[in-house]
Amino acid sequence: VAGVAVIALGRYALIQSAKMETLNVSFRVLIGNVKLARQTFEDLTNFAARTPFRLQGVAMAGKVMLAAGVEAGILTHRLRQLGEMSAASGRPLGEFARIFAKIKGKNKVQGEELLQLAEKGVGLSRELARMFSKGSGSRLESDYKVSELQVFQAVEKGLITHKHFLLALDELTGKGGLYFGLTAELALTLGGLWSTVADNTDLAAAAFGDVV
Image (cartoon, rainbow, N blue to C red; front, top):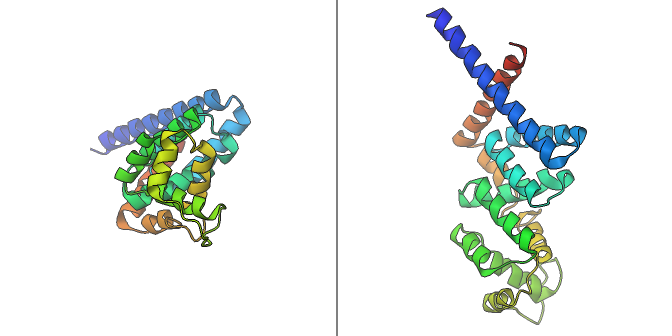
């Protein structure tokens, strides 16, 4: 019995080691710089360890973002922002990464993305209306109010750009924002703690597999 358990453990360790190596290789290919790719993957590993998101999911979302042209140096920051919305909605991080990639790829927000986010409980149109009402990144009131209907009309005309999306993302997930800190709160739940334990187990097994 003990021998079977040891074999099973060794097999599990080798599988996890192979998975980590595959992820490392894919990041080297996407980033094109070995040192930066290694640092980026380490940052994502640390991000996953502090959040309720599993490393495999974080890495897959990161690959989608990199393929869309997000710079490696700000990848973890963008994933943290998307993670706040994921925590608020209960939807997988990868879904938000794909929406982000579509908006960046087209350099504009379209009705499809607004509706997809709304279905996940993220009121991007409401935040954009608030931003345009004050004409800045603050939440100060102004005399001129922009409605969500006007935002949708601007979207139909292709006037809402990727830059506008990033500003709204900063507002929603930055300090004082509607979704700020939700990832940290979710990490303290039973599910979040279990995710951290599972990731740490996988990483320990991968490290063991590297020397087997």
